[in-house]
Each structure stands twice: as structure tokens, then as C-alpha cells.
Image (cartoon, rainbow, N blue to C red; front, side, top):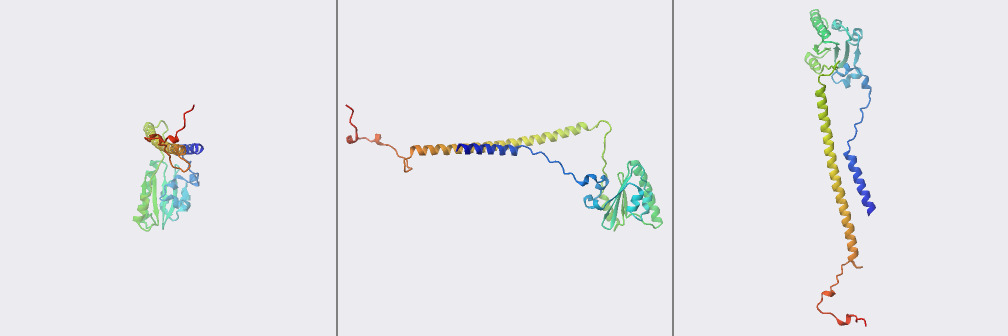
Length: 251
């Protein structure tokens, strides 16, 4: 009985501590997406079209990936310009990223002027075009202008900003970090305390129940006869005694 009691208590304690301890987060799996150019990840639904997307760092590469589009001659790849092209149904989406806003504005002005020139000459023009941040976004061979503009609406300009000196927002970032960390620690402490309390109540109830059963079993064995019924001796409570049942006094 005691061995079973100690084994049960030890098992409950181990289980309570295992649940109360926060599990460490597993590191993210390393996939081939780490080598994917950032510009491809800015395509709408890029996970679906990434395999067939075409990445360019020169104008000649872009013109090979997007054929028969004279508007591309107005784009300058000076200063590290990048481009990506992907097919969406019958249309082809092209995003050209310029390294600075200055290059983006200059190219946008040339592209707008070139589009007007091509229209006047009845030459092929993009179904839709728009400047989004430092991007110049084109849709070629689209079914209609409305759907082409809806596709451009899904393009979001994203740029990583790095401070060369001290980050002026470092204090606010640290405050937010410590607030989130403290909240997580408090939640884990409350969760662990609640589980520990439940474990202690369960252990106490189990120990009390086993002790009660053990004491009751001992009492039943001490006060019971062979038949299992309790026998009370009431001879001394009778008013009269039978002399024949009394022993003689010693001489």
C-alpha cells in the first residue's frame, strides 16, 4: 500500500511540473525559400507563381522574359535596378524596383511619356501601369484594364530601413519588447501556479482517501469477529448476575 501511494504521488508531481514548464519554441525549418530574391516574394500569391517567375537584373534579360513590349526601352537599370515577371492567367505582371525614389520618379516620367507616344503610333502598350513606391508595375496582355488594375492593387511596396547610427526608436522598441515578455512570463507563472494547485489538491485528496481506507480496514479487522459482524459485550450492563457463572474467590 505504501509503495503504491508513493508511486502515485511521484507520478502526479512529475506530470504537474512537466505541464507547468513552458516548452521551448522549435526553430523554423530551413527551406529553399531562403534563396528566393526578395522582389519575387512581393508578387501577389508569390508562393504559387514563384516557380515560374523570371528574375532580371539587366534590361536585356527583362526584354527576353517579356517579349514584344517597346515600353521596356524607357526603363533604366542604372543603380542596381531589379525586375521580376510572372504570369497571372492570360496577363503578365512585371515589377521593376529602383534603388532610390529619385530613380523611380525619373523612370516613371519616361514611362508615362513613352506610353502616350506608343498610343499615338498605335503600338502595343501595357494593359495597366502604375508607380507603387519605388516600383514601376506593368500588366501586359491582360483581359481588360479593370482586372489588370485589381492585380496591381495587390502589389505592396516594402523596403527594409536600417539606421546607420543609433535607432531613435530603440527605447520604444525595448519598452514594447519588455511589456510583451513580462506579459508572457506572468501568464506562464499563473498557469504554472494553477496547475500546481490542482496537482496539490489531487495529491492531498488521494493521500487522504488512501489513509482513510487503510485506517478503516484496520478498525474493521480489530473490532470484527470471524463472521465479520461487530460483537458488543453488554454483560456488565445487566441488573442481575447469575451466581453459577461467577468464579470462586481464591483461598
